[in-house]
Image 1 (cartoon, one colour):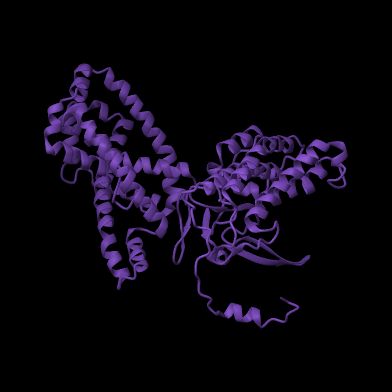
Image 2 (image 1 turned 60 degrees about the vertical axis):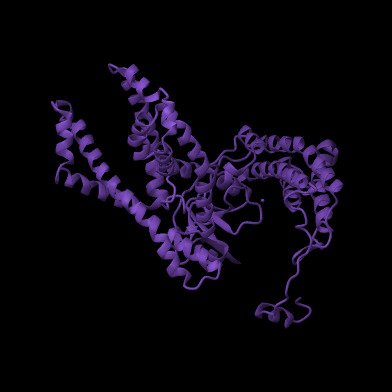
Length: 513
């Protein structure tokens, strides 16, 4: 999940995992409208019949508004006021920033109003929690009068202040260290409390009559326009929409196969090179060559040659494989997946030291997919910082050491050196791996967080398996006559523009170039 994203002038904290983001969305949606208001709406507006318009609007708004709002927030990379300004700038609207702020202030004010209401309720909650813990609550003869005393004029000012202080503390800690950590405790606890309440309510006198009143459908309510209007409002508020809360994937196979079988495997098998493997285990040797050859074939088909492709030009490709070539390549890729699973088991069977790197890990990340070489975003896993490639110098510090002429690098924020590669990527993007790859990795005992650098070989084998499946699927999509990639390989017109960088290159001596 976007986790920590780089803003215009500073690093913006965000969620460290998809699960954390989902929990936060649940916490945002299941609020007062879902706890207090929803049962009241159901009972007053047709019982179970109310669920028909409510679920209709939930699906409608969820598939349009929520998806659109989240996509808008991810694309703009900032809050409501900045996002609308950026969108207007892209459209060339004059005074885009000012207009964007004027539009964006609306959801911000809405969120502020909701937050004020929640602060009041949180103050009541703290008062009740304290009274229950001290036993005062259990001794009250009249709970209605007690609640009236709490909610009366200046009845809980101190508790409201405590609620504000707690909220401020969580906000200062930020999203990953504040909201996310608190959600991981509060949301499961919230679920447990509801289960307790469910059992308790079912044991109260008259519970059956209450359930009948709440859930028996009264179909005549569907003829009342107010039922539909309030169902829309309930769905709108329940999804936490418009409040600004949700505004906010050849050479790969070649390189991994070469490293695993040409460099790594001989060391584990106590061989001077890969060639003795042809005598001791000819079947494995032939299969390994076949896997690398498949990567070469893929690059040849698409790029014109296996190294430094020539068909990829500015604006597209000068040649594209035929539909039959794409389908044949997809079948070959699928046929290699069984061997790739065996490779994971093979490298998992090698004995390696049981150690853990003390440094950080840095990997490419991409929203909703497993990144290989096309993401502009990277993340330091321990530091919890995600940054754009343009801001790499702000997050990565190079330094000199006395025993080497090479520059070393470390995370600027923590001062830790860092580990990159397949293991770092799997730790960062485990959820985006294919199910087949995750099963093979888990079977091999590889699950995040994994910090043994020797397991990078297992991680590479897992990535090979993952890439085979994804590449096969992509080849089949490219083979579709009216598919999503139809005509996209045809070079498009472009304009050559002289730049300072190109002038410097052209001015270099020919032996340098």
